[in-house]
Each structure stands twice: as C-alpha cells, then as structure tokens.
Image (cartoon, rainbow over all chains, first blue to last red):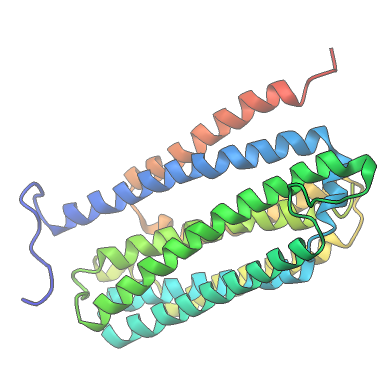
Length: 215
Length: 96
C-alpha cells in the first residue's frame, strides 16, 4: 500500500472525492473535444447537403473494406483498453501491462492501415492541392470532400498518436507497480480518452466511407 | 474505486461482439439501395447505437454518478444547439 499513491491532496476530503473530481474533469475535456470534432462534422454535413452528387462520387474512391477492417481493429483496441481498466480495478499488475500493450499494438495497426490508405490517395491524385485530378464537372466539390476527409481522419490520427503516447507512459508506470486497486485513476482517464477517439471514428466511418454509396 | 463498479468480463465481451456485429451490418447495408436518405439514416442510427454502447459500458457511464451524466449530456446538448441553428439556415436555403 505504501508504494502506491493512496494519500489524497489536501483540498479533497477523501480519495473518493479526489477520484470523482478527476473523473468529471476528464469528461469536461471530452465535452470540449465533442465541440472540436463537432465543428468539422457540421462543416462536412453542410457541404454534403450542398454537393450531394460530388460527395457520393468522391466517397466511392475510399476503400470500404479497409475502412471496415480499421473500424473492427479500433473496436478491438477499445475492448482491450476496457480490459486494461478492469485489470487495474482488480489490482492485476501484469494484466494491465499486457492489455495496454495490446491496445498500443492495435492502435498502431489502425494507423498503419490509415496511412496505407493515404498513400493510395496520393498515388491516385486525390489529395487536395495542385496535383489533384478528378472528373472535370465534379472536381471542385470533390476536392472539398477530400479536404474534409484528410482534415477529419488526420485530426483523428493525431488523437490516436497522442493516445498511444499516453498508453506507453501508463504501461511503463504499471510495470513499475504504480497502480493498485485503490489508485488507478490515470488508467481510467486515458481509457475514457481512448474510447472517445473510438467514438469519433464510429461516426467518421459511415459518413466518409458508406453514405456515398447510394444517393 | 469500489468493487461494485467492476463489470464482468462477459459483459465487456458481449458489448465487443455487438459492436463488431453492428460494424458488419452497417457495411452490409451500405451495399443495399434503400432509396437514398434511408441509407444515411440507417448508417447514422447504427453509429449512434455503437456510440451509446461504448459510452454506457466501456466508459462506465451507466455506473457513474448523476453529476457525470450532466457533464456528458452538456457536451452533446451544446453540440445539438450548434447543429440545429446551423442546419436551420443551410438546409432551408432556396426554399423561400
């Protein structure tokens, strides 16, 4: 017990209250993240309603199977993250590390598939900019679709990279026995963050990959 | 914190299986032409269902305090205001 941080900071009555404050603080941060990504989703929806044909056409240039596989990979990583938090609640030191490493592995696999998709888009001249080439009648709005595609999946990928960094830090701390059944708040909070990033993808996948297949 | 908040491994596994199943369903439905708007509606309903599963079980919202629910709800409430005001403009243009 003495090796773990069970003593609460002086401004809190007890560790329970300290935990609740951290928990709520994380949800406030996630609410700001909802607004951050929400702005991009709203921009996407607005332009899609203005150019439905071009957005459907451009959407069909995304690989639906790579998108589906990546969604499944990310869901697997959320599952292993949930199990890492559960192990932390039960005070299992080695299991936390194993599940955190699995989560890192799956997160990295997701990014690998994502960047492979980016590579194909560069090859196909579908990256907005001077090299962008598309059927002339739809070129301008299709370029807008791909701008949203790269901005939204790119910001999502940045969140994934930050998340993997946080997970790696947690794995090192967990292997040193810094967490216990009494104190594992950081594992829970990074878990919330990781699941949030999963939810963002849960909406990005249908909006970017699926809804364009039928008008 | 307390043991009562530790959910069973089978619950997590069930949620995981449901999420993967919904992912396969949403991809499958995308290949069926439901007549335009309905395709988008189905895709978004499935996405909302998946998000709810993640929030309620993986993020422990179901076993969290009422105050946590207020915090979670506030984020989506303000998102709804932003969307409603914006779409009330853009989606109704050129209909007057």
